[in-house]
Image (cartoon, rainbow, N blue to C red; front, side):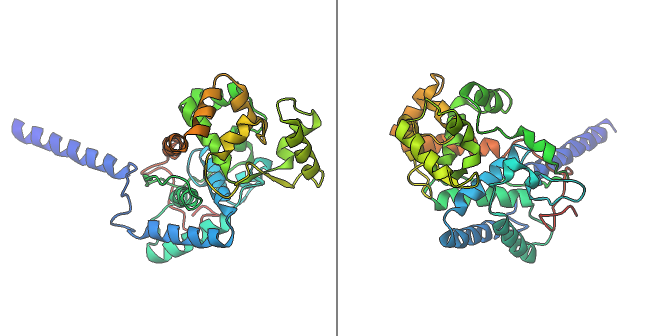
Amino acid sequence: MEAKRIASLFLLLLIGMQMRGSNALSMNYYGMSCPFVEMIVRNVVNQALQKDPTLAAGLLRLHFHDCFVQGCDASILLDATDGTSEKDSPANGSVRGYEVIDQIKQLVEARCPGTVSCADVVALAARDAVFWAGGPYYGIMTGRRDGTRSRIEDTRALPPPTLNTTDLIDVFVTKRGFTVAELVALSGGHTIGSARCQSLKNRLDNADPTAEPNFLQALSRTCSAGDKTTVPFDRTSTTFDNNYFRALQNSQGVLTSDQTLYNSPQTRMIVDAYAMNQAMFFYNFQQGMLKMGQLDLKEGNQGEIRLNCHKVN
């Protein structure tokens, strides 16, 4: 009798372990349920970027802005139903690529109905966008669930472009668990894309002395066209490389949160290292992205698999 009881307890424990394992993220989460999902994502992203290479930065920013608010749960994709949603926030005004995610989701739903989360689509699309632009390829664990909350007030968690290095370390390292090297590498994601002039008004209005004078004058001329005018982060804004860090060395960082990384002794040596060694930058960027993709996850019975990324089921 005792042996039967022990065997039963062991069986229950084994079942529990299997259930927990099935809920956890894994590198081949959709291997049986939707084996073609990564191919679908890659094909749609590549086609979109061939038409508009600037969308690579948009898809990367979409993933970042999603994960830093309520975790990587595709909450940024939800339309407002009562009040305002995350996408209505001024902090998300420059986020792009929603239509790419929609196209992927439509194709995935046709092949694997109710199986793949919008959150996983966003994460995979960002990875493939980085790789298409010349950046590193990294495996992504999947199995995220989609959130059901999206509020404009939650976007206060997004780090503003006016932060200095001390503030950035507090947001990324102290509160989120990244290393300082990963913080600098993730900032290097700005090697693709551009910033709206509204985000650097503080530097222009006060003639920021940390900016190279001719560069600051050029920014002022460009931004005289209005707050929505865009400025590339570096001279190769559609190629994922380490030119961003070389720009910082030349005091040509576009945002305060960019240039502060070189002005601060806490991060200057890391910037120098990445400017000299692109492989080191790529490696730490990979590590940072993998860690970011697991922020405040919803797994198993948490959240849902949205059939339409713009609304809760």
